[in-house]
Image (cartoon, rainbow, N blue to C red; front, side, top):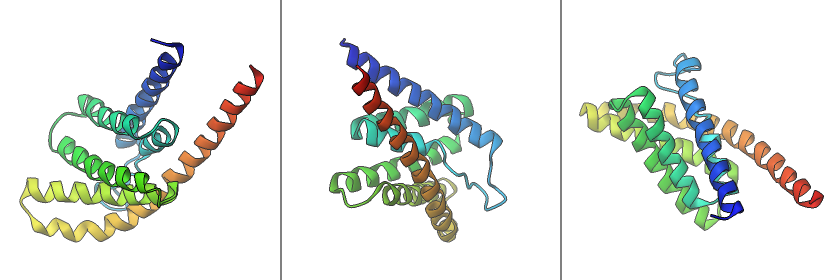
Length: 174
């Protein structure tokens, strides 16, 4: 392995660990159930956007999938896991498509991803509970998804701006 591949793997492992901690911590410490049942800000998705823009699609998909699996090791592989993985899958498919088309900014990608994540979760809830009435929850998830997607994009853009500046400084100083 080359030095650069080891550095890349180390950075990805750190981002994965941060994502798992944020995901788990948000579920335990920051529930937004007062807005609507099941609503979370989704701060761990900030890590996904950072990985997407800093490393690329392959790493984005891998880190996102591993984050859902590793978080489930702490929370269990019950209904919540199936709901989380379905939201992740739909959001990831949409992000991959739009990222390749290069039609959306980081804000558009993040908001679209958040809305699709909620839609994927509702689809899975409808399947698991065999109820079509949960679809009525989509408007709430749409608005909360747009808001959380915007917040996540702002954070991710700020981090990416600072990381890129640091990289330029590091490369200049060598």
